[in-house]
Image (cartoon, rainbow, N blue to C red; front, side, top):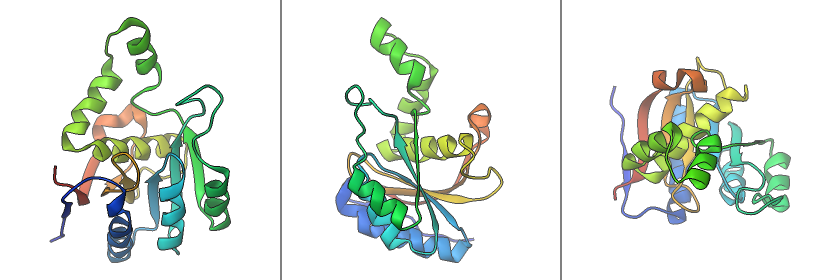
Length: 187
């Protein structure tokens, strides 16, 4: 099998439209029906539900209070757009953070979640994100662990990375395999 990987000169939101185009094309070629999209404020999610019509879009966002107590970063306007277009929004604790971040913040030390996240970031910030959201979605029962999906993530805002993978549950983390890297920043 032969597949093409697209490398972007710079990370960031300016790549979002091209990422969505690549994802739509590859999903069609492989018969993939589900796409996971990381989105903080919902801008990328709103773009994805419009650009990837006909696919099951699951948006994974972080828990309430991430930036400040009792605050949700995902805007109500974007939530309405995603839901009106049939997208599913899952809000959850970052797989690699949670209790690890609490220990780091309180005791100034790192745990396995921090080390795992930092290791994945050597492939790019968003590579950590796509793996993390796929496991979060599997743990929530939103995707099967025996079907390929495409996961989309970004560096900062927007999307700049997409991969084909088969999700696993968190207790099976080391069984996860990225099958294809569709696109990512070259930096």
